[in-house]
Image (cartoon, rainbow, N blue to C red; front, side):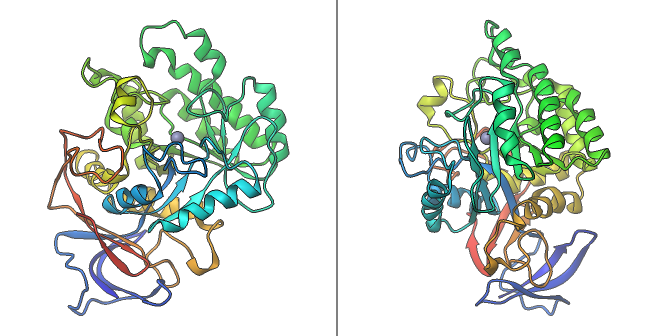
Length: 412
Ligand SMILES: [Zn+2]
């Protein structure tokens, strides 16, 4: 297939054409526009397909949580949001903590249209898999059972993962315990818990020579620690979520606070602005959604987590319009960096991988329409949980089409 229009490269945006081989699904050439496009891209920007390297699609061998989401509905929500590849977290009832359980979960991903990379879980007593995979460690109680009760227990386990790719959920359980009696969810999980856990995670990453990643980063106070670690050569990257960029705790009301409850929680306005700046500067590496679907009933009972896959493309348009992100910034934080993260874990058929519009890369594209806003409604989303934190908001762009390995998947 052939797509022509305004192509966003990593260094520049230019009028051109992308040719994708139908048989391999890989890009064969990037050249000059000739007026023959298989997709009408007028008013749009053509990005390498967006990646979301932190989602919870809820499906595993137990099937206990597929009422919230499964790999088919998560894939539909991803396509709707312009996301072509995702990485799924391991805190399932049957957690993928060894090669057999990982392979069992991987089989379930075959029915997804978007490519799914699976994290393996790290919990008390686990050991690395034979296969080369990314790992996730939960430092404190979150959703699921994969958490550690002490720093010593966590370090003892991590010491077996020397050199591996490990992502950390940074919230210090001891600081949260000390705030357990506070009035609100936000006060019970204070910024200090993330900042303290950041120091510990950076120490582990450096000491055990991990390729480290800090998940859903949210605090201004922790940023200098990450930057200092990067400056001294520690291999660490960081994610930020759409909700920590869009909402802060000053926006919480009696009506919305249960819907906007997540871990880590919404932070102060100055934290939010610091995250936006850090993402634009490149100090934070990725937008990763922490897409965490729960049913309406569960949200009203206080479940933590919000869904985002449906709105990723439109959210990128919001960063451009409201916070002066350039098209190149969007290409970097939504496509190139997430592509780099999963590259080493992809099957050989994926060529050079995701995240770049160049020969040999996967022919998956996100066509973002900057002229058509998306008024987010409950009815419009494809996630099985059927709601969005952006309901009632109008995001200033929408996904015209999502191309997966040379095939057009309509977004609407
Ligand atoms: Zn998560």
